[in-house]
Length: 457
Image (cartoon, rainbow, N blue to C red; front, side, top):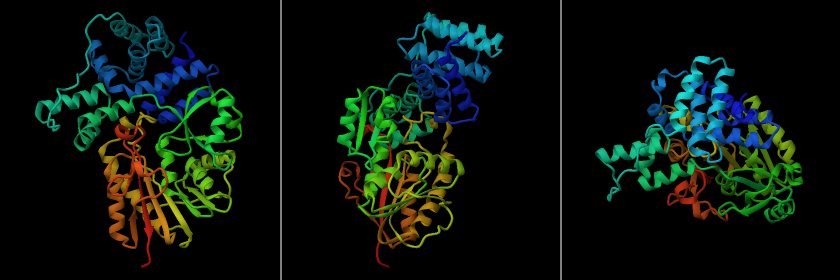
């Protein structure tokens, strides 16, 4: 009989690879059915780890197996991937347990003929029966250009050993150079820390840190986001701060988008694409009880998610309106600030959502950019003179970022790109005036943001 954690991890991988669910949703559902926190932790480690290391794992399976990957049934391949991840990347997992559980899971699923094959392949890994190798890092190119064979070696290493799609590897290598691309991919393959943002409607960050410390949860302050904490020890779920909505889980780069918007007290704000609601809470906390944040989303499930989250966090004056942000909006030019936190490829958040790297292709980017541009144009119609239009994505790619802003500015000369002046933002604003976080520089996920001010016509 297999352990609950490994069974849950396999179910998560199957849900992701058959397209039934994204990784985050599948993992959340699986964890709800696991009573033991150790099982929840192991299931998450395996499912996330396989997605982070999938290309490397597949490369090694291809060397160890007696048949090509394409000839292995998808369910059996997912079992192999999970077991190989445990054997190679988890030091505290006994090899015999990983092998036995994998074979047991195959038999439970009725894959009796595959069980022997899986056992043989995994024994090759567990017993070191043959040398298995990943592409090595290339020789350093003094000029940093990596042409010819040296470029091919660099791409093989980055795409396979560091496990990222080759098309994306080529883009990052060409834009940032080998050392930066390597550091970026290593960042994406590391475990993400638990990051909090204080709910300013309930408490400040210093007060929150003191309250958590009193309940055995140790934290340190985030380096870039002024209201953030990194958890270093302890269980958040058992704290009164969690029960009272004193904080929300939010990546540090995502927190910076709220700082980019920088709403003043009493501001009227429209938060388009607001679900799940983290930025709405941040905006409302900054605007204070005299402000107003209209939170909107379009798909019913997203609106329901937003409603549940805001009910728990209780931000002041944050009504919800269901809107299609690509269609005309039912508002005049009444908002001091409009945030378009646009749906995007998510390629800047591969540490948090590692499955995205395998689901996206270059052909996806034009579609995202078209939607983003449409939303930005509609949002602009609701910004008052002197008000700010804030555009943000968690994408690393220019088609979704500066190219969308450039196209918008070409058709909207009344909007002027403005260098953000919010406290704490200066370190992540580039020479063009954009907020741009880069993992190899800032040690946070890759986010983009721009502030556009409506001037008098």
